[in-house]
Length: 309
Image: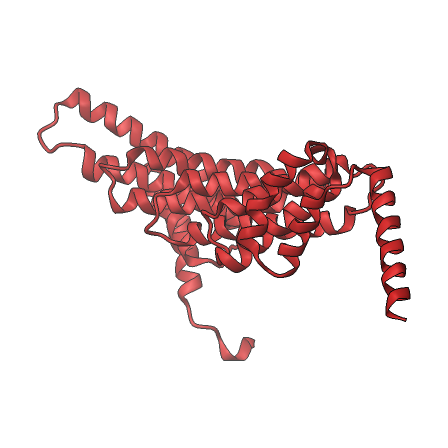
């Protein structure tokens, strides 16, 4: 009986080898690689990936090889590197799955490749957001790099995917981060305010009615005008410089107004917006409009009449 089982095993193994040979040259190193991976010897399996290519160079064009390479690197990223943002295995996993996707003419591994790539894309986006939420960070380029990788992978999976909402979120987040850095050190980080304005502008290019970006642009331009008057204009400045600085400040106040009026049309009961508009009109020496919005503010400050509930 045992002899018969041995003969049967050898027959089945021979058939598998012949089937594999008919599709891709049989590679014993590939079998050892799979064994290491199944035994969760991730480091050994990863190091053996190069051995397989050295011994069986035709595997470079094998969708299955890259499919397995993707999962080996993915598991190292998750289980060994603990999803570290600087893990090299994550990028290697992405490249492997993309290679498999490209070579997989019959879509044998399409679902698993796409699922893995979708997961990896999400880790890049999440890392971008985590860095963005750390207000002490100066890693602006890293945020942009992670976000771009998220977009590149997602586009490879879903070419028609619309990134509009994600673009608004990332640009708003970057705009707020640049703005905070500038406000903490106005002399040292002056260029960050320009970067903040650019980010908010990109957001409203996608959605002109994005409330938060319009609001922050209004506040930024108003504050820039105030900064010129309070911080940049020396007490003993000559008349010519005073006129130039005043004109520059008026230019900022004028730029603030359309954004603040935009958000006022969306949230007419927001006291901070009404107060901001009143302050801009005061700075522009438009007393009639200043009084108008100060009266609006007074109405908003009135307690609600219980009889009108």
